[in-house]
Length: 338
Image (tube, rainbow, N blue to C red; front, side, top):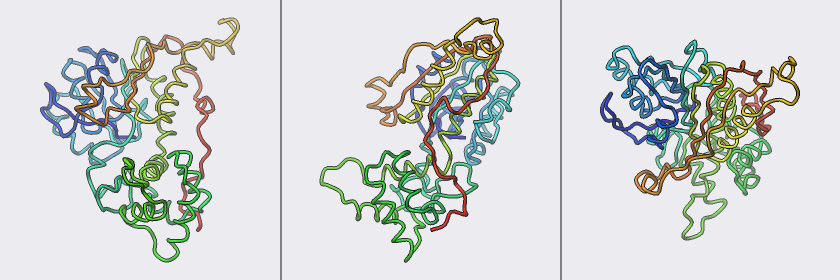
């Protein structure tokens, strides 16, 4: 699961460490109410979950980060049985509940993960080159030290939109022959030295590479796509799907899913092939961005976009990843050779 929620203050659970993005807009779109069940697919620090619990609704909260689950245990106890925490991937959120009245997803890395040097998500601190949200599987260091330069260039270019992807990949391949990359600052410094940095540049030269590695290591685009299909399967008629994204690649996936599911198939609705493609969601408005006041108070909200759709009574369609146009990437396997 992509841990995305930052925590905040709310009536249930007290203060948390971080500020949830677009909180008022999320609750307005989600419309949680007493007696309803809401799935928070990206629990993080529990910001959305606290606000949902305050409305009287029950929450099934999912996170693949064991640290997030452990940190949320006190809130689970305090909720009086209205919160159930589930450690696992949010791409399988439909396995966490039989049915739901709402699903909310806050995509991306959480502030908690970025702020902990040992998790290796950021080069703001020196830490192990890790980036694994679930603390299992191949790490960013495995990818950097074992993938061929052509595969690295593809990852950096497609997932980071890095214009120097090829140059950086070839530099990494050459440098690791002498000494593997094991620390965040080592990789960041090597990229800065190789690419250069002009005075006044606001974005560090390694930023897009780190973003690409994180997305790749955690299969964030695939997880999001499959989570949308899972939400379609679990939501009751009238159930609300609310997704907050922070990157154009993520937003494009959500936009395409809602557009596809909000359109009826051509032909008679009585034909089986058309019925299989009946409209499963009603689109509710366009993308919502944070206000100037929120972005001033919380810079993380600057790139945030919220999209919402409401489930119809039509049967869920088959999961078809081709609707998203996901980039073709190398497989993340440790057998990748230098």
